[in-house]
Amino acid sequence: MAAEDAVTPAPLTHEPPSLPSSPLPKRTKVIDPTPLYQAATLPRGTDSGAATPTPLAMASAEHHPTHPIGQPTAAAAAEMQLQVQFLSDKATAPTKGSAFAAGHDLYSARDIVIPARGRARVDTDISIAVPAGTYGRVAPRSGLAAKHGIDTMAGVIDADYRGQVGVILANLSDTDFEVKVGDRIAQLIVEKVCLVSKYLALNPHRYTRSSCPRSSSYKSSKRACEALVDSAVQEASVAVRWQIPRVLCIA
Image (cartoon, rainbow, N blue to C red; front, side):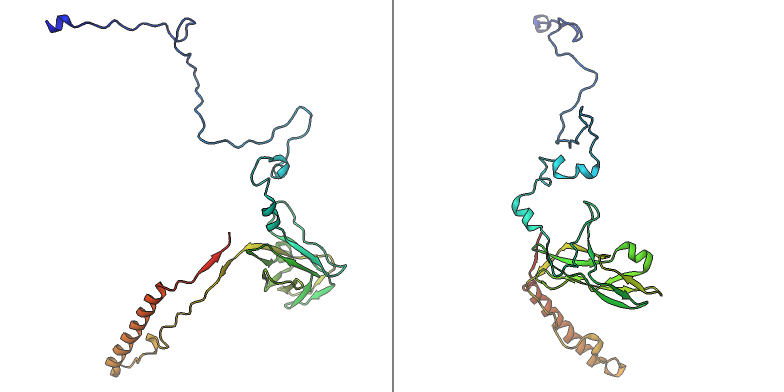
């Protein structure tokens, strides 16, 4: 009886989605999924006939009005300024070869000859002030190094240094190298620096295992000496856990 009382549901009928009378949404062959991220947009050419900007031009703030890097805040712009002061009329401001160049070219303010296999200081007649949290590093120019064997030495410029920027050039070739006023002699790279605010000297014992007796006739003394050194090192290691040096890394 239960089987006879069961009502068989009527089959569902509907018009195919392709027919105009169908209530179902029309299907398409290609369904574009909703993107999970906002795609980057590049500037396109216009009907005015202007050429499409090059990659170098597209990196400027003019073509990226809404990009956070293209529109830095006033505080960020002031922080990343490299201040330059001229010390004579022969000084030349540092320049960059391209928008993405890491180094700023430094120019000579003197006529000088770098002797073969020798070195000399070349004055730039400028003083600089790098942004907070950075220092200046004087690096060699690849062209001078490859063609003439010219390298730079001792190129660290601290953030609080306000003296003249001098470049020590080393001539690694067998011929003299002549430098004229206005020649590019090196490049200045501004790099971030981690400032250490505390020092901890780990010197647990003035003796080490190497200072213990080595002769076989002093085995007992050697073992006692090594045990003493190991104990001192272990105690110092425990103390170091509570005296970790603080390092301030400015991002």
